[in-house]
Amino acid sequence: MDIYEEYIRTINDFPIEGIKFRDITPLLANGDAFHQVIMDLNKELPSYDNWDKIIAAESRGFIFAAPLCSMNNKGLILARKAGKLPLVGYRKSYDLEYGQNTIEIPKDAIKPGDKVIIMDDLIATGGSAKAMVDLVLDAGGIPIMGLFLIELRSLEGYKKLGIPVVSIVNYGLHANDLLMINNRKHKMCKFKEKVNENEIRVFFEDGSEEVIHKNEIISIVQVEKSGRQTYIKYRD
Image (cartoon, rainbow, N blue to C red; front, top):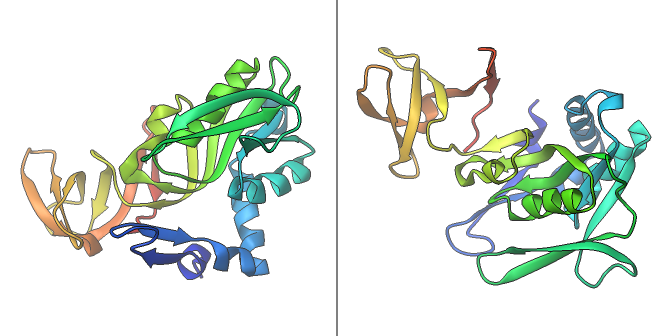
């Protein structure tokens, strides 16, 4: 059973029309599923000596970072909304669609040279994650990777971070994603643009383009510098 398919609920037109909200509360409410999430995240962590702490965003980031830190005997840094901490070490503001938000970390939470993982439940535009990267740098730490349960690929938030990003569940596509498809003429193509809710435009190695149905997508293919191919399950 795919626990993410089963227990992440999509709510259409929330919080505003046109938005698909990915609701993780059913995933958290099921003990077996929640345990599997933590195990899946734990598999993506670097080896023990290559990281020191996790910085997690208020509030859902705390849910996943705390058990990971406890399991691995590592420190947890809470990136809290402004005004929640008695002793603020560093603060960083970032832009929202309307206005700004500010997050703060405690005084002395990060020591110079600490190797820190950036964590939240979801990465979208990357604003809050980039703010955490900046907080780590301001404190003298070294941000080494971003780790997220969910990534909204079309928003390309990972580009802001400047560090490797790993996500367990990926929704949507971003420009030039390499796709394996169920097509008689071609097996591989690249995503160009969304046509409508059910169809996308892709292009092939020979330069030709075609509109295909989303249900023809088998997987997203991520090619590493070494040439190794990793297959990512496509979710709409």
